[in-house]
Each structure stands twice: as structure tokens, then as C-alpha cells.
Length: 386
Ligand code: HEC
Ligand code: HEC
Image: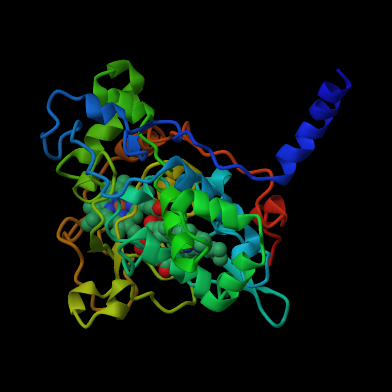
């Protein structure tokens, strides 16, 4: 009896000290015979999965599947400030779960500089919901896979400011990580395995149970009358939103020049134009998803618009009108018209109402209480102001 009590008392401490990796797939994923997790959504249940571009279009195949342990190790790493040079930023500092995995800022705040202030980045942190389906990543499309992408914030001096050598050293100096990497990948901690684990975790950030999805599945009562009207304008030939924000991902992963405004007093961001000699890419940005868009204001690559009504008005006023003066932009043919689509105020409000129906955070991951490094998860999550 005494021994039992002692065990009972000791248990919470033991549980706190050692981080255990989950052996279960995240919600909405099914464990397959090969030990990996396969996504299951309403979209697997349609009768007409081949229907292209329609409301019931099938989700693209996800090429890589991960084990529960890889996903869970990624979750620990995503929230662990150990990954940054100053040990004060985690991925979640800029991709916060309660802000749609963005940070509520027009432009991200990065590493602390010599003057003690945090560096303000040129662009804002995009949402990470459904990010595993995108074939181009970053606002200018400069990464193709999540593994590649992870190297960018880790080793950018303005962001997490780390180096591969220091990250390896810090992982090696954190004994709690070694067994977890071996469990997840059968190998010791390495920068490559960090990237794979982060990719695994991000592949679990899925959002396909919104009211819109239920409507697409045939539950006509899932949307209000106004939202149905908004959806019809959204996909209609006049507004053409769904030509680029294609359901069910609400992004086609393409680069498009829509004449985004520059921030007041700032030079225009060339977007993909900075990476290519092709003049057609000047001012092009990767089409962002609109999933959970109500959670991620302000909008556009540098937070140019504070709310969704202003975004829709941007598309409605003479198209291309906001393009930075003096820029020779080849505005996309779904945008470029002599006049705007002349949507009524009602149409604009209806589209905004429809965008609300894309909210679904039911599969949000749990935020770890403590991470293997023992560093403070919460402090990095609620990164202090500049
Ligand atoms: C200091 C803030 C900050 C930190 C820390 C940060 N990010 Fe980001 N993240 C951004 C910004 C800003 C962008 C967009 C940059 C661009 O497009 O030029 C971005 C883009 C991304 C994208 C591309 C999303 C898309 O839709 O294309 C992914 C994926 C991502 N980050 C994952 C991560 C991961 C994983 C980590 C941790 C290793 C991380 N981020 C750390 C600010 C941050
Ligand atoms: C030609 C392709 C295209 C069309 C058509 C289009 N968009 Fe976009 N949309 C984009 C691109 C590209 C961006 C990112 C622009 C930037 O950041 O500078 C964007 C950004 C957005 C954003 C902000 C997303 C975020 O995370 O900041 C919203 C909301 C939006 N579009 C809604 C709409 C609506 C509503 C319509 C129809 C009236 C529409 N779009 C038509 C390409 C398009």
C-alpha cells in the first residue's frame, strides 16, 4: 500500500520530467499498416471524386506520410525556443496557434538586434493551416517543400538567427532529445531530422471541417443564406475569386500579379520578381489560402489591409488601381480589366460573410506544457513586444 502511494506521488514528477512521444496519429488521421498516418476527411467520401474544380473536387494527394512519433517530435520542436540563437523564439512565436498560426502582425518580428529591439521583417507570417498541400511556399514561392522551408527561418540572421553547427551542438547538449529522435527516425538528432520532424508536424495542421466543407458535402443548412450568396459571387464569373483561390484549398499555389499596394512610405515588394529575370513575375505573390482567414488579420504580404472588407474592396475598385506607381506590372488576366467587377455593397458584404464559413480549428494540436530543452514555451509563444 505504502509503495503504491509512493508511486502515485512520484508519477506526476516522472511524467513532467520526461517528454514522451505519442504513438497515436493526430485527429483526422488514420494509422496505416506501415505505421504512418493517413489523412481522412469528408472529401474522401464523395461519389464523384474526379470532378475537377467543382465544390466536391478531391483534395490533392499528400506525397509524404509520417509516423505519429515524427509528427509529435515536430510538435515539440515547433514550440521549442532551443531552435533560435538567443533561445527566445520558437516557430510558434510567429506562427501562433491562437492566431491562425500567423502572428496578428502585418510584418513579423524577428531576432533581437544590437540595440535591443526586435528586427521588423519585410513580410508577414502566413497561416500554416493546410500548408502541406501547397506546392510553392513563402509569399514569393521561393521554397518547394516544408523541409527546405524550415532552413529559411532557422538560419536567417533576422529571424531565428541560428547556424547549423550551433543547432547541432544545442541538440547534442540536450540529452532529452536523443531518445526522441531515435524513436522517431531511428537516428541521433540532426538538422535534417529537425526539418523532417517540423514538416511532419505541419502536415498535421489540417482544416477541412468548416461549415463550408459541410455545405460542399451536401448539408445545405450549413451556410446561411447570405453566405450562400457570398459563395456564389466568390465563384461567379464577375468576381472570379475562385479562379485563384480554388476550393477546397482556396489556393492554387500559383504566383499571381494582382497589383498589391506598397506600404505607405516603403518601396514596392517585387515578390517573385526579385528571384527571376522574367518581367511577368514582377510583383507576383503566391496565392494564399483563405482557410481560417478570419483569424489572421492583417492581410496581404505585409499587412496592407486591416480587414476583409478592405481586401474585397481592393478587388472591386478599378482592378490594378492600387499597384505601386511607376511599376510596370503585368497584372493577371483575372484581375486586369478596364473597370473593376462593380460588385454591389451587398455582394462585398456577402463575400466577407462567406469567408467566415471557412473557419475550422477543430484539429488544432495541443500546445506542449514543457519541451525537451526545458526552456519556457509560453514566453516564446507570447514573444514580448519590439
Ligand atoms: C520571426 C518570425 C518567424 C519565425 C520565428 C518563423 N517564421 Fe515561418 N514565416 C515567417 C514569415 C515572415 C514568413 C513569410 C516570409 C516570406 O514569404 O518571405 C514565414 C513563412 C513560413 C512558411 C511558408 C508558409 C506559406 O504559406 O508559404 C512556413 C511553412 C513557415 N514559415 C514555417 C516556419 C517554421 C517551421 C518555423 C520554425 C523553424 C518558422 N516558420 C519560424 C515568420 C517566422
Ligand atoms: C489572379 C489571382 C487572384 C484572384 C482572381 C483573387 N485573388 Fe485573392 N489573392 C491573390 C494573391 C496573389 C494574394 C496575395 C497578395 C499579396 O500578398 O500581395 C491574394 C490575397 C488575398 C487575401 C488575403 C490573404 C492573406 O492571407 O493575407 C484575401 C482575403 C483574398 N485574396 C480574397 C480574394 C477575393 C475575395 C477575391 C475575389 C474578389 C480574390 N481574392 C481574387 C490572388 C488572387
